[in-house]
Image 1 (cartoon, rainbow, N blue to C red):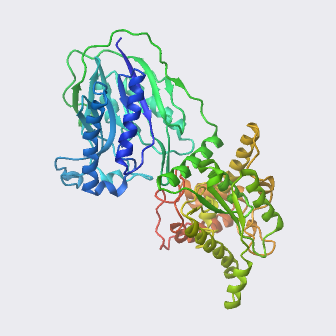
Image 2: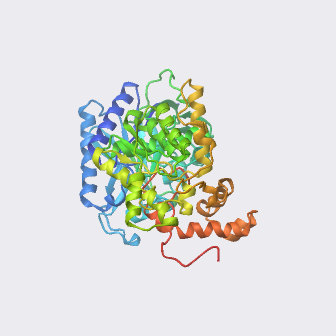
Image 3: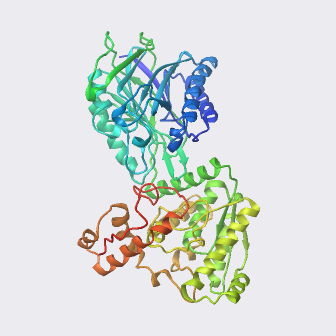
Length: 584
């Protein structure tokens, strides 16, 4: 059988940075060539970054992408890689009217191209356009209607883009109909907790349906709320994994494949879902037989807590770096949320770039102040204490505030202090709120909700405790000092805005609360379904009312790393003004 050395480059692209993204493609193509690759691939929209959102609607950006693609093809040839076919994702436009989709000529396309000998020899657009969760691709793009196939060293290689694998029909069965020997799918599929198992099952299934070896290449890095975890996979036609890349790591998967020879006559015509075969022969003759050396290998999978924690670190690091910031600022209360955010920040940008501020009020316990200082000692982050008592007394001397207004004033003074330091010193503020609090509205607008990014906004409180324990244990296992003080984990959570206050005064037990929230927020179950699952009706009514009433607060919370199937933000879009209540 003919042989082919495939190079899958899972890289991190930055939206809009066409020059830097092209440079990354050149660098990794050079690496692939040095390793003897015969076909090189890069992820979906690697040239533009993903997702580009409404940038896709700007003709200037679309044209810049197209120009960058042709320049990249010429540069690859000039660098000596002209004979090496390179597959790369980019933003394109349609050259013909497609009125049935309500789009004029020139409508954007989520596309990919094959670059060879200094030319763009083949282009194609994603056929299936996702329109669920964080995806709005039907808003932006028109679908591709071709079945792209390139012949490389006597092997027909079918090409697809991300959702083409996730949806039934289309290019996967068309690959079998066309008799291709290899299917390469380039992807920018965002990370979700437990998604890697789903992804593996999907690729195995599609390889069997396509009837050929299937390579699934994924992006890594972060873009706003999204994180990309890599985990590129190659399986044979029987669904057996023959290569799997590391999670959350940039790199190149090289694998030697024995593949069936292409038919003498190139495939042509129309196949499944009305796809027209677009076939280009790049090299007809098979390679001379060479010793099979590269088996691909399978990287070890991360455990559940390590995977989530790594996603949070990668998401924060990408947000800070890609937006041109250097340092972060955190209000350290001594509690579990700010402690975990601080640990994530130290791992993401280095402790020397993390600034913590303890802002005790007259209600702050001595152990909370001590725990904040101990966290700083353990991690090595920059630390200072700025009491808010004088500011609080000045306000109270002018305003006769009591009850909740008095409590929230303390949180807002802390928010003002943090934003003042942010403006003065150039740090971005990290908001420490978790998903349980955001769901129930247990946060203060312009207080603990201030900030540029919320690293744990998609993490329920019970998961906050699990990750804090995991991070400490991971440090112990490596012979390092656990970053989070045990007292921050062990003590009852409290906002400490009044004497003896604990979260349990206002919220149900987190173990029960998070189960109800998971059903209502993540799984869209109604009140009757949740009660039928065994939860006390009055409690369900109380929780759902809190969630419904807090929608206006969540709209004003900063972005944060998405790690669940339905995070607060683009995933979950509910009206602020609504009289519908699940609770009746």
